[in-house]
Image 1 (cartoon, rainbow, N blue to C red):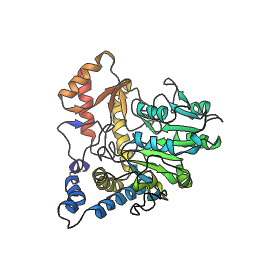
Image 2 (image 1 turned 60 degrees about the horizontal axis):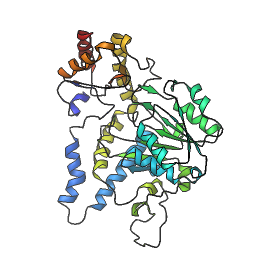
Image 3 (image 1 turned 180 degrees about the vertical axis):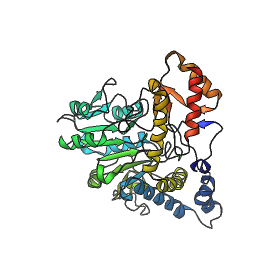
Image 4 (image 1 turned 90 degrees about the vertical axis):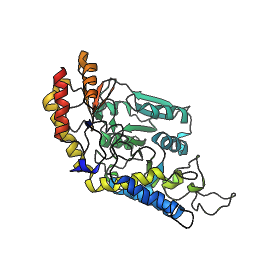
Length: 369
């Protein structure tokens, strides 16, 4: 049924870890929300445009079980993390210790290194099992000031034990930053239950909302302590005060917003998030895992990502040794969209993929191997 709701190419699209497909209703919704106030309005369109932002953060609050005031729109995760790290007074001291994993997306490492040049950045090595909470416990020490943890890892199809990592961080009084770029939408997440200190995410992948609609979430207890440096008039408690001699941070997470905001990406995302809030992350996760289970039933010998659903993301990683390139070429010829990284081919079925898509993928692979 979901197939009918999305613009899908010929063949089978299994690149949802990269960019999700757009809803068929999106263009009309975008025109109504973004263009109509601009094209047909009798005055400037900022009032309805800012209503789009309210809609966006409210939809995020529904998706992740939190309060809208704790979300701030961001252009991308790198910008969000930069603003966050530079806003925290406790990270400005000499010898601050940051824990990450070598499997984290490189952009996140770049941000930490440049934002905190004097920090001692410690990495969990690539050959360690980041699905194991005991591994995190070995590295998350009493001198750790902040731990950065990705919920899902794009190149390995693994899930981090985020509940345990966040609990370990609390135990040693370290801050936690959760990256949900690869999990948002496809893996249920309840912020009220999980209670990280901070979270960054995007809407381009499983939430099918295109680039530019990222977000930063701040635990309510930390908002007043955050002192963003990259600010603008929309970081102000009253953006329309227009007094150059007076600046006061917005009381909510919107203190991270900055100058004149982009609107179009959030119009796309707000429309699409409404769809996924109706579908629910639980249903999407169940469907995705059923599709991955079917892969495991037929191609288990070639899957190098975790088999157990508690340890795996929405992506299966497959490697066919010396047949890898031949399989990729045959899939491309049959218009089955996948990609390949260091550890193998990435396959990510969404709500609009069905068993026929997966069986077609399996048949093509078997015809080569």
